[in-house]
Structure formats: structure tokens, C-alpha cells
Amino acid sequence: MLSSINHPLLCPSLPKHGYCSSRTRICNIVRKKRARTMAFASNEGNSEVGVQVGEQLYLGLDFGTSGARFALIDRGGTIHAQGKREYPLYKRKETVDWVHSWKQTLFLLLEDIPFHLRQIIASISIDGTSATTMILDSTTGEPLWRPFLYNESCPDALPIVKSIAPENHTVCSGSSTLCKLVSWWNTVDSNKESAALLHQADWLLWLLHGNLGVTDYNNALKVGYDPELDSYPPWLLSQSYSQLLPSVKAPGTPIGVLKEDIRTQYGFAKDCVVCTGTTDSIAAFLAARATKPGKAVTSLGSTLAIKLLSTSRVDDARYGVYSHRLDDKWLVGGASNTGGAVLRQLFTDEQLENLSEQINPMKTSPLDYYPLPTVGERFPMADPKMAPRLHPQPESDVEYLHGILESIARIEAKAYSLLKDLGATQVEEVFTAGGGAKNEKWTKIRERVLGLPVSRAIQTEAAYGAALLALKGAQQCV
Image (cartoon, rainbow, N blue to C red; front, side):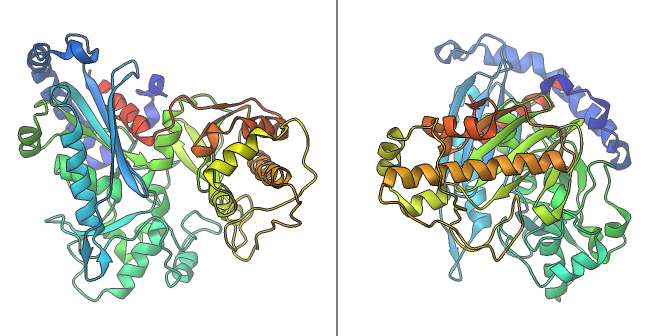
């Protein structure tokens, strides 16, 4: 991943936005100040945390569904500090004020970073939840509407979006960013001339660099951006609301230096660069360091999410499959509703641990389930009416859990098989993230069912992946 920092595909669209010259200006500022900053930092007693004299660090922040984390790494990927915060739940008219909550959490995390390490942070990047959408005043950056959350659906806009987008396009989902934009556009009567669209990560980064209207091509995918052409498609640009769309750059691209007031308040270096971010799921994939085609990451959290590094792009809304661009490759995958949420409906954590120990993972379970927490499936088949199938239930809880774990593994295998059938690179090795990665018996079951090597990813936190993007951005200014 990091070896392809200077790949030509990273910057083909930048001249259209006048950005290459801007990046040169940013990097020149950094070069002029770097020697002075590093000399200053070397006298701050960094040896106590293992930082070498003259070394720089790179900050990644992850804003997930329930809380936020930070990771601070060096050039070699070693973590020097990390932390997390739950979102404070501010209320406004009986609803959660997410804007206030996210902003407060961002600055709390900056305060949590050891002061003597802040002074040698060279760059910052942030990931956020995919399709979490904000409509802002393009002059002030103030929200014009409450945020549309990642899982929020706007079915009122779906027929309109389907009428303009290509068949089976990624935006043809009620929860897509484009559906949220169209829903807002058709609902609000106020003046829209000064409105601008940003994603959660974009807005948080704007708080740090102050240049409104910039996103990355991972976050922009679900608003209709074409990462292969590296531009918004004509069918989208012809719409009246296209004026709200932000300029798009590669993840990990320097945008500007940290705002002076923030730098002064928190003690960051004058040349600290803020870089474009990505989505939380992409950042988690980056953290796993799966850098070769055929490598994949299965996230076993509340749901089962799959991402496979492929040389070919695959998009098919019929099966809930879409591709993110990753430098000169593609990250193909989807998310099933099966996963840990089902297990927690049926077993406590203690039961899961004790029962799993009694399972023989080399024995095939005869039970055939389709474990879902509620009605509806997204991938590897998109069926909103699919009902959970968790019967018959044997008398033995060990056999029951074995059957459920193996059934989820079969869904995972079907998902990877589908990606191959649709044209993606064949999976060769699977890294596991999420809570399910800790279950060794489940890992062995999955290895048997998949017929592939399966191992736990060394790094699984999205904040670590965001820190790798920050490192990538800093290397463009070397």
C-alpha cells in the first residue's frame, strides 16, 4: 500500500481542481519549517516513550458508529499512543445533536494525545462512517440540516435516483449518500445556493484545516463519484443539486496545514499537515496491511463484512456488491446482516466462550441455518424479505452453536465465491478483524469451510489505518 504512494493514478484529477500547485505550496511550507520543528521536538524527553531524536509521528482518528479512537504511529508502523472516547450524547429538541457530539469528541481526542508527542506529529487523517452525510453552508461551514447517519434510509428519493443512475449502480440504495442529498433537496424550501455537501470525515477534517469543500474518492463513491474515471459522471453533473458536490482527491492527499488556532491551543507543530481521509471500513482494511491482490479481510462484528483486494472492479447492486478504489487496485465486497448480533441474541459472552471450547472444528455440522437478527439480507444476496432460519434447534447447545458458526462460515464462503463469479480476483488468504477474530474454534471452522488460510489481522483498528493514510500524505511532502 505505502509503496504505491507516488502511483500516477493518485493524482490524475487534481489539476482540474487546481490542486497540484496547492499541494506543492503546502509541501514547500512543510519543508521550510520541518528542520526547526524536529530540532525543537528532540529536546522534549521523547526517549521515555521510545521516540528517537528527530523522529516524526502520524495521527489517525477513527469516527465509528458508537465512538471514536486515535492511533499515533511512527514511520515503521509502531504505535506510540492510542485512545478512545464514547460520543457524549447532546440533545436538541429530543434528538441527538451529532454535530456537537462529533466536534466535542474530536477535540477531546486531541487533548488525550500526550503533549510532548503532539509536537512531532507530521500529519493527520480521519476516517468516518460511510454515507454519513452533512449539508452545510458553503461560506460558514454551519450545518443547514441535521446529519443523515450512515444507516439512515431515504426511500422517498430512491425512485428518483434510479431514474437517473445506471442500472444496479451503488447509489441505487435508499441509504446511499445521493439518496440523502436528493431527499434533502426535494424537502427543504430554503435558499440552496450556498449549500454544500460533505461527509462526516470531510467535515471533521475541515475543522482542522479550514478549507471547505474537499472529500476523498472512497467517501464520494456513494454520492455517485466514478473512481475509475476519477470524476463525477455526466448523469450526476447534469442535476441541479450537483453544485453541492465537493472536489475529490485520493485518500491521504495533503489538503493544508493545521489551523493556527488549533495548533496553538493544542501544541502541534507549525508544519503539521491535514490529509484527506476515507471510510471506517476502508481504514480497517488498510490496518490489516493486506496489500496484494487475492488478500481479503473478513470483519466479524455485529455483521459480517467482506473486502477483497482485486485487480478488477466489480459493482452489482443486485447482490449488494460494490468496489472502492485503492490506488491502482480495487477493494471489492459487501456486508451481510449475519454475524455477531445473531449470536448475542442467543448466547451470553460467557456461553459463547465456554461452548466454543467444546466444539470440534474439524467435524462438519449437519445443521443448515441462515442466521439473521431480523428479517432482511444485503449480501451475498439482496433480499429485504429474507427471514432468519435458526431451526431445528438440537438439544445440545454446543451442537447448536457449532451449526450457527458453520452456517455463517458457509455464507462467507458463498460471498467470496460470488465475488469470483462476478469477475473479482480469486481470494487466496483471509485476515479476520472484529470480535469474532478472537474465537479460535470459529477460525478453524472457517478455514475448513473456505479451504483457505485464515488468520487474525495483527492490527484491526480503523484508527491505525487512518494513521497509515496520514503517513502516506506526509511522504508526499518529503
